Length: 205
Length: 205
Image (cartoon, chains in turn red, blue):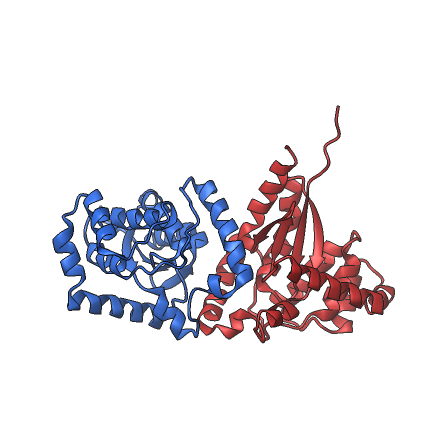
């Protein structure tokens, strides 16, 4: 009898990204169904967009696409049964939550914390880049906020988030969510299921 | 007993667009299954991109996205069972085929002609913007090429294609394929099924 290694999938996401919101809410149960382990990879889209020559989200820069995206989001959220309120500010800065999510990426509370922050942004229409909001999201998932935020704000952790964002860029990431399975890139919430299927199949060969 | 009107869906496509290729190959049987009538709307993406400030396809302008798109296309074609060869020229100019497709939009041979041209571009890697190629595609779907091409090249028909492209822009189209159902826009081959479901449901209310 051999012990199969559980296949892994990297999930690169950013809290300001509306399509990352969809995947953050969906990925847990889908990955469990496929018996795939999710490696949570928070990063910042801002520096990626700047490197591509854009000052902000393409959904803001392209008026037509932006107008469409909010209709699409309402429809996708209805389809998936995910709450939705169009944020009055987009894209919301989310550096502190990303730093905390990086701390949480190897902790059991990481996924639930990420969902809490996403819901604040895309269902409660609240700003998410301040210590009080992040602290209350942490408490809500049963974590003592003080030490975690202190750790998140350490120079070492700030540097890790910068490195992780650099890594995204060097691996060809140009938007979020992005999934990697054995080095293969899958872009967008629409490809979540395909990425998971690829991960499951890859574990059989 | 009431006679329900068959619901309609507009299918806006461009022969140079690889994701339009996927929908062109898939739409016939899917629409039949949903009992939805497809209104074929060929148009030109070039003037749309120019109006958005781009000199060519975003898949060319954005190197990272471009690299990804070809991997995605190979995977999508495998998934759908559609032949695929990465075109050596992208995006291929396709003005003559679009003019002919506009003539064919109200003819029974229109859909099959569109598939022939798409296959030449994305499965046979052939240039498609010349009279000989277009004529042979027409003959292949049982149409006498000469009169159709003559009609396609008439000033009236050229003007209609310009108007149709203008209409796309004024209705907020920013890429292809794009579907409209009762004024609602759905963008991208990934939304084809949703657009058809929306069309079927709309016919019930």
